[in-house]
Each structure stands twice: as C-alpha cells, then as structure tokens.
Length: 314
Image (cartoon, rainbow, N blue to C red; front, side, top):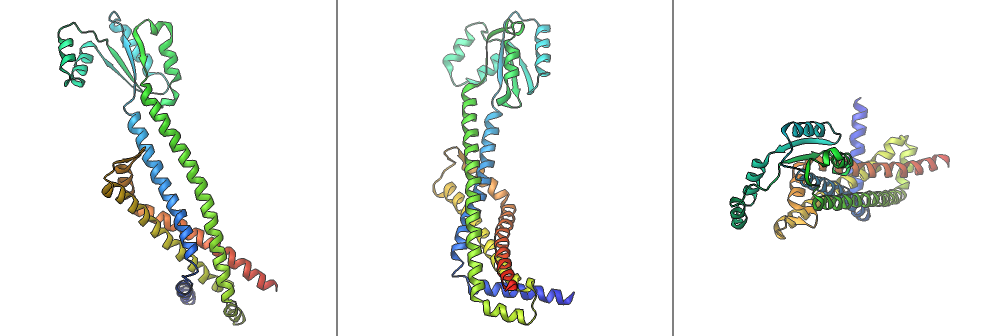
C-alpha cells in the first residue's frame, strides 16, 4: 500500500514537471480546449436563460372566454367544471362583470378619458373565464371545445388566445432550438480538434522522451507508471483550460452588465444570465474541470497506449 502511494505521488510529480517543461508546445492544445469549454458553458447558460424567458412570457398568457350577459350561474359553473377537466388545463379563473370592471379600471387608472367613459355608462364588459394552459403548443383541444356549438352560443365574442405573445414564444423557442443544435455541433467539432491536438502533443512529448522511456522499460517500469505522467500532464491542460473558460465567461457577463450597462442582449436576459452563472459558479467550475480532464486524459491515454503497444510489438 505504501509503495502504491509513493508511486502515485511520483507520477503526479513527474506529470507536473513534464507540463512545466512542455508548456510552450501545449499552448495550441490549451487554446482550442478553452474555446471548447467556453462554448459548453455558454451553451448551458444561454439555454437556461432562454428557458427562463419563455417561462416568464408563458406565465402571462392565458385564454380568455367572454360570456354573454344572459348566461346563467348554473351554465357558468357547468362550463368551468368542463374546462377544468380538459387535458392541458392548468387553472381556470372566473371573473364576473363587476370584477372585470374593477380590473379594467385598475389597469387603466392613468387613462382618465377611459375611466370617465366607463363611469358614465353601464358596465359594458362581459363576465370572463381565464384559462391557463400547461403547454401553449398543445391547446388544440381547448380551442376545439370552445368552438363546439353548445359552448360557442354562451360566448359574446371569440376567445382571445394572446396571439402576439404566442408568436414571441415561438420565436424564442425556435432561437433556443437553433442555438442548442449549433452549440452541440460546435462542442463536438472543437472537442474532436482538442483531442486531436492533445493527442499530437503527447505523441511529440513521447518522441522527445523516447530514450528516457526506453531506459525506464529496461529498468522494469510498468506501463501504467510510464503512461501516468503523460495523463497527468494532459489533465493539467484540461483543468487549466477549464479555469480559463470560466474566467472568460465571467468577464463577458461582467462587461455586458457593468461596462455596457446592458440588461438584455437581443433575446438574452443579461441580468438573469449573470445571476444564473453566479449562483452555479462552483458547479460550472467542477463540470468544466471534469470535461477538460476527461478530454485530456482520454487523448493522452490513447496516444501513450498506441506508442507503448507499438514498442512492445517491436
């Protein structure tokens, strides 16, 4: 057990020394890996931000059903009960004529002409049922129910589906889907490039130390002992790249929110994105380090395995 611990620390020491020795030739590997990990983290934050924006808009959207003045209380209760039992209905709220009027007056309190016009006439506003769907993209069953003749005869006007907000949600959802796909493609491409560069970097390092490796072989060093320092070295590349990527993302949000005094950047809510990033900072740091170390160690493991296998065969 003591021997294994000593061997482990020797591998760590040798890997760190090799990293410091070869830092100049590892700049390209680190740079590409920084780009890869930055895209990974930025994709996560952007998708979470767009998701929050969609939820905020969705929470303000409902379907409004306007009832005729001659609709009885029993008919209203029956309609509400039927709506509550429909699929994709989250909640149903009924407002009688007086409640609708008070809500209208509150919403238009600053418009004195409207307030005066309302006060000088009898209440022209109909009783209204507000339906909040679970998924705005699946409201066909609600529309079909409201269009049935028995229900349509109870309505004074066609239902309101908040079309403009639905269009905004569709645009954001489409943008989110496109960015997610582009992010996945970019991550795959840059991860492959990172792995390839690290693979070639390790091959170069192995070639430069081929005499040293041969001597270690002759002295009876195990394959894992020879391979270990290279994996440690490439893992340091990944960990360092992860830290740099987090610093870059943090700098972007700090610059956007303070220097540019921006709260939004197109569809991106900068304030939420910054808050989300700050609240998950250490989680992102750990995730980035894990991804970076995985890319580096796997690439180095393949490179050393090929070399050592080749040497054994010869």
